[in-house]
View 1: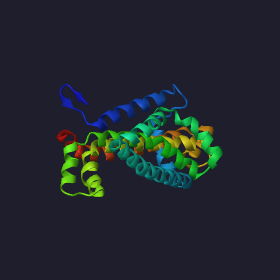
View 2 (view 1 turned 180 degrees about the vertical axis):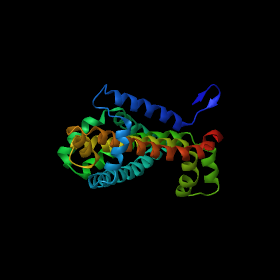
View 3 (view 1 turned 90 degrees about the vertical axis):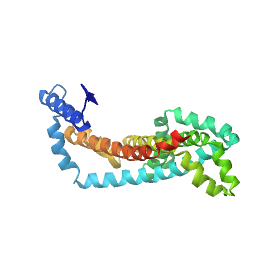
View 4 (view 1 turned 135 degrees about the vertical axis):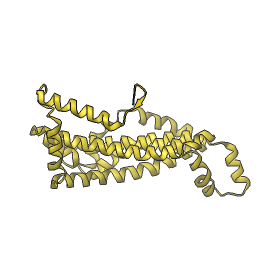
Amino acid sequence: MELRGHRIPMFVSLLVWFALWEVFGRLEVVSLIPPFSEVVAALAVVVPSESFVEATTVTLQAFAIGMTMSLTVGIGLGMLMGRSPAVASVMGMWVNIFESSPLTAVVPALMALLGFGLPTMVVTVFLFSVWVIALDTQVGVERVNPSLVEMGRSFGASNRVLYSTIVIRAALPELLAGIRLGLIRGLKGVVIGQLLIAVVGVGYLFELYSRNFLMPEFWALLIILFAFAFLASEAVAYFERKVSFYASSR
C-alpha cells in the first residue's frame, strides 16, 4: 500500500486495524466483539491448552491426508485432461460441476456414510480442493509450447522424463496457483466439516467457545486459523513468484 508516494509496510496497516478493533471493543458496541487486548491475552491461554493441542492434531492430520490425496489426484487428472482431448471432454464437465457446486451441502451425506470421524473430514478436504487443482493444472499443461514437447521427443525422452522435466516445469505457474487455491479451499473444507460435526478438532472448540460465550478465546482461535491459512498461501505464492519466468517465456 502506498500513501503520497511512500510505501507503507503491511504491519502498519495491521496495527491500525488492531487499534480500531481495540477501540470498538472498549466501546462495547457489540458484546460478541471483545477488545483486541483481551483476544491477545486469550491466545496465551488457548495455545498451550491440552484441548487446543488435541484439536490441532486432528485438524492437521485430516488436512494433510486430504491435501495429499487432492494433490495426487488433481495434478494427475489435470495433466491427463491437458494432454488428452478425449479425457478433457469426458471429465471436464464433471470437474466444472463439482468446482462450481456448493459442496457444503454434501457434508451431512458424508457424515451419514462415513460417520463422525477422520474419514469424513479427509473426504471433505479432498472434495473442496481437488477440482481447482485439476483445472489449473489442465490450463498450465495446455499452455505448454508444443515445440518443447516435440524437442523432447526428438531427443528420445521417455514419457516419464517428458512430463517430469518439460511439461510440469512449463506448467508450474498455473500448477502452483492451483495448489495455493487448493490449500485455502482445503482448509475451508476441514473447518466446515468439523463445524458441522462439532465433536472433533477446531470445530469442537469453536462450538465450545461460542456456546459458553468465551468470545476472547473464540476470536483467538479464529486469528490462529486465519494466520495459518495466510502463511500457507504465502508460502506457495513465494514459489509462484520464483517460477513466474516460465509464464513469460511461453
